[in-house]
Length: 214
Length: 211
Image (cartoon, rainbow over all chains, first blue to last red; front, side, top):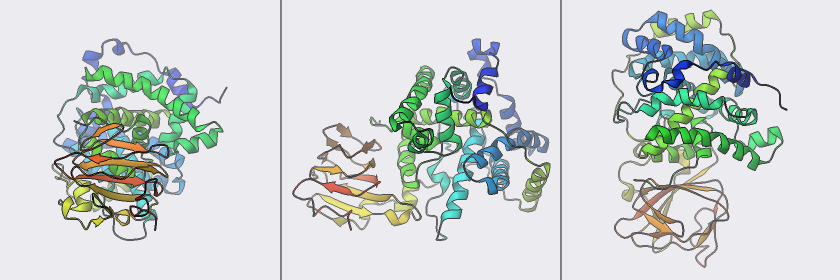
């Protein structure tokens, strides 16, 4: 039995909300973080911004440290939050939950930081955001797609039922930026095993996705 | 409507931000035209958010917040009112006239253009290939993994028909003999993790990838 991770603990402790039984109503509602982010976007609300900082900055700092940017962790937190402030007026709760939106900004700022550290010429012909999109940036996208609103809640729900070994692999891919091969090497298991764990886990999400497309 | 999509493992690596820039470009070009895969990536981005939330957290000094506010106040960048209409990554890289690029003809039906130098500081090889309308490429296998997205026209091989924005990954075991459909020249963007290996008699001729 593998060591219990904090992710797993959090998954187990999370209580079943009665709202989950009535998705139609509850999922149309904005979650509190999305409401705060909208206040920042509309009114430059600094109190709301500070609340977002208190909630998300510690997550982003860990994210930076987990993927080898320890000595730049505070710097990444700063870059992410400056970017959140500047882009908040583009945020649309109908296109992504605040936490998903903030995750994609953190991911892009991390990629950006690594590109800038690595590059040998001043030229960057393609910007990070040309390659990795922030949800909602594309104006042409039809506004409300219900699956976007439901995604996060359902993902959280389905994660509860995943075996720990699957969550461990996913966490390494997302938090430590490890390729499937690197995860296999680190856990000393065959690459095929890593891939099948990920597939099994994603299968649950895919089923969810199909439900949402109806 | 695209029929050939990236597999879930690759989309997950994309969502996690682990792919190289050329691989990410192939995915992005496909996503821009494929609502089905966009919703898959939405779900994967949500998975990323939930992972970030459920892993450990590390306390951040309150002074960091003050520094951020000081930065926001001192360098007040105009907040964008609406998303600026962006040129697609493809037209930034290659302009809007794919046919007008300095193609190098390798065979009667096949031209290539190596654009690896547009992606500095990384190891993948990035190749544009053009198969003229109705043209045939020689049989070949792939020495490593080759990720391809169709930019224009369509081609067919033993796996089926690949239309514009379709996505395919071929490996060592995949031998194929693509034929472009009539109508348009077929242009593809391929990212190679190792040089192409040819099995047919035209092998040496069409071997622009080994230098």
